[in-house]
Image (cartoon, rainbow, N blue to C red; front, side, top):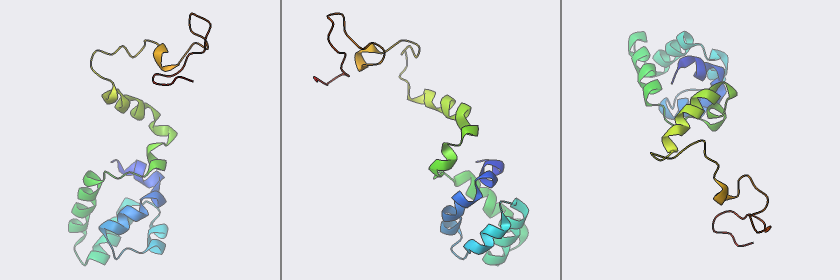
Length: 123
């Protein structure tokens, strides 16, 4: 994860920070306000380690961070990235531009004049 995205949504990451560094205090995190340098200094202080070691801890945490809060995932600034990532869910050979009428998308009535129901629905 990029630090800029984390900083823009700083409070959303408090639970993940508190999981990684149990001695972290929410009031201190609020004051840090997403500043990476101040956060690294804070981690050094609460971990009783050097700033360089704290920087390594923060960097490793960023790389391991997989539980991204939903409000961050759905941030409109991530729309293009989310659309690109969704391509992994499309089976090989499927035409992404074809209309999938059998699922009820598109027409209100079938060729016989009856309603179009989603696949597996009879009413």
